[in-house]
Image (cartoon, rainbow, N blue to C red; front, side):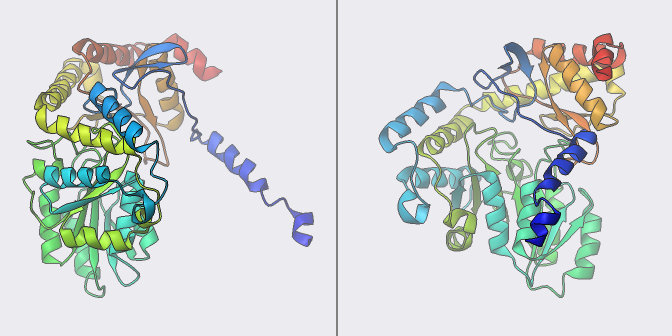
Length: 407
């Protein structure tokens, strides 16, 4: 009783929200009123979409839509339970076998989201007596999976194998098992992990290696299978995780690897065991997408042509090229901005000029930036418009933006 008289147990929430607002970290949703694509309708206005992870433009592909409709008509809107109870359908197994064939692994396991795939897999593989080595720029799902595992977690400097080696030399021996975890494509900067170095260190220090291919699957490699394919590491002893919600245009996550690994995860990955299985519609759409990725390489080729085109446009526009745009052979370009307030202003200006791009701020990243992500369905004219609008806003003193900032 005395505590109720002294303090409202929920009063801290208002203060926390005030702090978030004050730091310009506050976030809110924006309602999209159209199908996903290279253009979006938001608040009744058509915008060129540079904020999507739909790299191949498959989310609106009629074949995925038809597959989802057919699966829903046959199996219903959901599977009503976990896969180990009433939730398993042959569609799930078909998708897992397709992923394994795509990745050239012995087997695969489909989770209900990529986040669930990471936290469940990491927590199942290692525990309190073990060691995790994590790239400092890893995705939240990798970091949170590491925390949930109870293992000792040590971060190495971003894409710095020599720092990782030093940590292993100092800390590997006392631990039973060790796991190196990394994104293959780092979504906030667009650079790639040094996969060969990580695998070599894994072999030298007896570490498992888990690679998050969320932004690599469907985009990289001669077959579109991801950065493991791109780096010619197919068949190496590693664990491949990825999502079905980006280039594959659906929803869900997967882990691909040895048959023993997958069998173990079916029995120990809590986020798979205790979660309702992926819906028939999402499963069927992902299955259709994998087939398209394998049979229509021209989609991937067009995406890479767009990457080259935008890179050339940035280089030709001298003012833009001086911005030190973060880019390393991926469809992700990042423009560094000095602070959170400025990046929000820039996002608003871009939206006024018909460009929808992501304003990424702390705590998601250490430094604010505008993140540009390309799709195979972007046209050369849309790319030219992006560069021209950026140039006009950043370098030619947009008075509307100044008035907005004052308000």
